[in-house]
Length: 306
Image 1: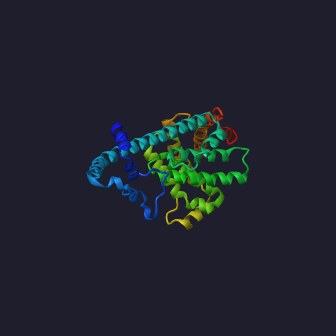
Image 2 (image 1 turned 90 degrees about the vertical axis):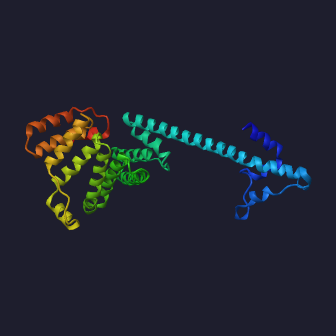
Image 3 (image 1 turned 45 degrees about the vertical axis):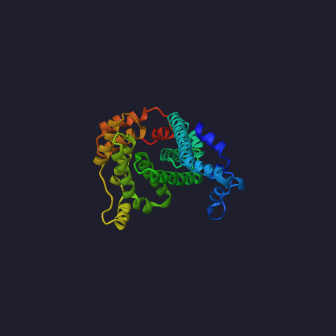
């Protein structure tokens, strides 16, 4: 770099070869190229001029390589700083989520809603949905938030199809939006939802929430009323179906992966056992759900759903 700086000072016309950002490019983008050949009269006469030109052409490859190194290092530093910045935001977001600070989390993440980072986007989808679930959120606001959440989840999936969380939240958000589109649309999306839950489990078999959600899918279609079954038969050659035993298997599997991770999983274990006429085990799991510490709005709702 010291040699490059010295050559730059010694050869004043060489600066024209690498026009700075303050020089606008001319028609067809060739202003910098034209500047390369604008040498003063005294610099193109005699042997001295020839020597200077020869010296310049010998130095250009070195200068080019040095310039490339500078820009490469600057780009690397910028990219590294960007990664550290995203990691910092994600750490803050996870802390707020674990602390139950739903509104603060949403306020933090909406500042970065134009981000192209899948990890940030699926967290924003989750935060939008959590705000929609708050008791103080109006029905109109809730609808806007769940639609917003779906857009964030969709973008997260587009950015990284290998993200189990992006698959999970995309499926959740499709289901939520279906609540506003009617039962026909909700049933029509059934296989799409199932596909993404299964993909999430495949990508991360240790994620208890994805397994739990697959259980909900099974439970929903196991108890589907007759008129909804008729709609399903109209939409699909083979309509989606499941059993309470299948749902129970997923709820237990989720509990094995992460015991007591979610109050609703405990509740649905109890309700599924009731459907299977096992009152003893139903009472056991329903009592566990009732005694579960209420950390979130959903935990509070579970206590009133029994």
